[in-house]
Image 1 (cartoon, rainbow, N blue to C red):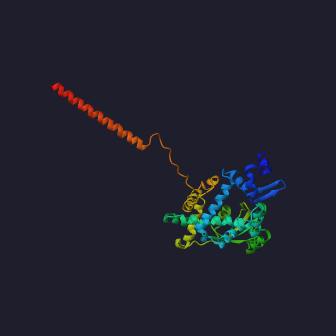
Image 2: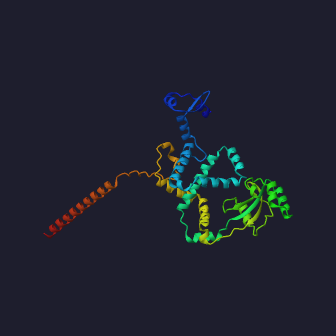
Image 3: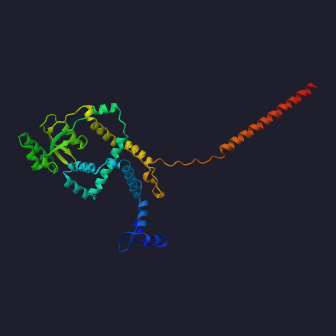
Length: 340
């Protein structure tokens, strides 16, 4: 009921002047919604995280600004497009990916901005990370060089099992790709793709890496969020020396850091501190609370300041010294009288 009352209220009273002068955001047959009304609602309506919608939007805008200022020249449009293509491959190609994006109420531009922000965060993590020689050596020992594989993606397990049977009976992999695969991005290449560590879903990567010899095919369908895969090893990856693979190894370490939310928070908090972020609107102060140290407040003064206490101690000491002196003089007088 309260929301309906707010929505249908005419601009009146103290709000009249601001409502009439504020630019219009939207309107209905019952009235208009002005920018200042919309702004106030953004500052008061809470989200599930406890922040207001306004705080969330401001946080996103500030983080984008801070990251762009620090690393904007290190992330190119080409980098964003390449990452977009990698993501699209996992959804069956660019066309299917764009349809999925639109179905979720987003645009390609929105997603590319999200990808850019993610790449900026990754760059920040990489710049701040200081990996020891021991960490790099261990990562190199665990590192698997990228291979060349081919796959057929279908919607149901039964079809995948039938494809495996046909392949075992001598069917041509490329022909079955064209006949069955729903991954339209890889169909023109007979289902082939580079297996880049960390760039495919874990189930797919694990199954592909388990293939030992070139030409081997997974004998059980590999289930992922996208359906069922049949995978063939085309060319096994050849791991170079540590010097040759150093950049790739560091990339794997950065990916591990990217999975550590506390580390990311630490990195971004330092960037926010260096950027001297100031929020003028008191109602939106909580926008960056996760990344900014709380403002220090002076502790309330106790009854009697330190100076007053010191003065009192000095006065008590002076009084005590005076009393001791008078007492000593009295004792001397008494001694003299006894002697006489």
